[in-house]
Image (cartoon, rainbow, N blue to C red; front, side, top):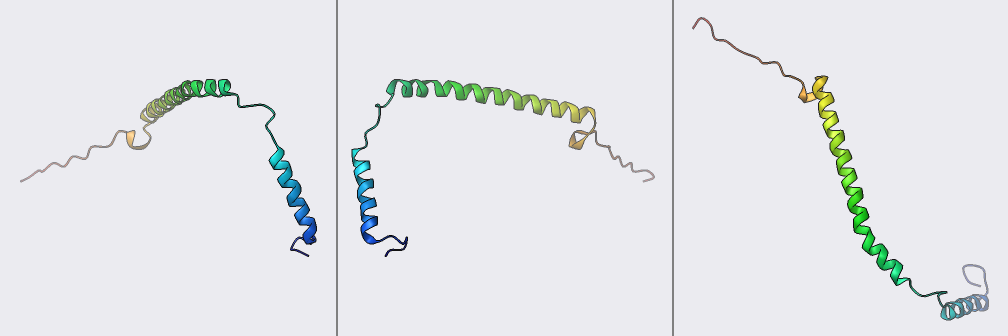
Length: 90
């Protein structure tokens, strides 16, 4: 008896059946080279469109955040007080 509880003869039969199935398997149809080549040709254009749209969206978000923060005096974009020290009496 092996670790799975099967007898040794049974596991050998299973292995033999699997090997027979694998060795006789053939694909139903061959590779679709034309479709694959078309997909490869189209992919760079799709990626460029995605990156271009994402870049424009990011730029719009950054410009909008800069304008909003400037208008509301938020963060380091707020006007900073000027400290002036005058020396008098010397």
